[in-house]
Amino acid sequence: MEVMDLKICRMVPNRTFRPTKLMVINLSHEGFIEVADEAIDILKKLTGNYPHLVSPHVKAAIDNWEKHVYSRIDAEQAAADLERAEEEALSRLAAELIETHQMEDVLELLSEKFSITVDYQRLIGLIGKDSYVHALRREVSVLEANAISLEQMAQLWNGMGKPVLGGGRWTASKISLITKPPEESFHG
Figure 1 (cartoon, rainbow, N blue to C red):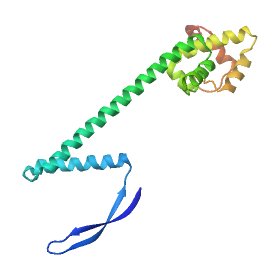
Figure 2 (figure 1 turned 180 degrees about the vertical axis):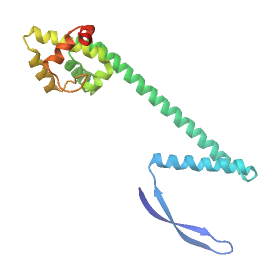
Figure 3 (figure 1 turned 90 degrees about the vertical axis):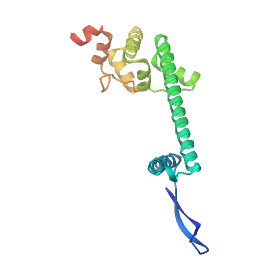
Figure 4 (figure 1 turned 135 degrees about the horizontal axis):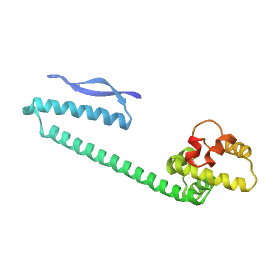
């Protein structure tokens, strides 16, 4: 917070203007809004307790501030709605891409064609764990068709930083678990 000195003139009854030092704190925009909200709350209490002392200017200031607050809330809600809609659209796009592409290709397509940087964790969040496991199974099939062993896959995926859903590092046994149907993986 930046503090500066400001000289103002204060009128003393039956005397001339006298300079007075006032400390002014330079607040961030959010800090200013918080202080202004608190000031308006105090003014509203005072105007409720002493309505006969309320000037039209004070009443107008309170009304204008409340309009500002409501418009700020509306703008924040609109921004949140837009962000949610963009995230849902990105989720749908990633889900469509993961059905026909390898995960690394999806990450690359999102980056190059759509200028969206996504890592594995975010991709999993976008497509869901079931789609992630399905994509891993497809990748295992492709790698096995190219004579890549489960141990080599584990080394490859660990090197790429591909997340293991249960945590830890990839091993041949963890990869073999994802290739089994779900009921076999968890009950057998």
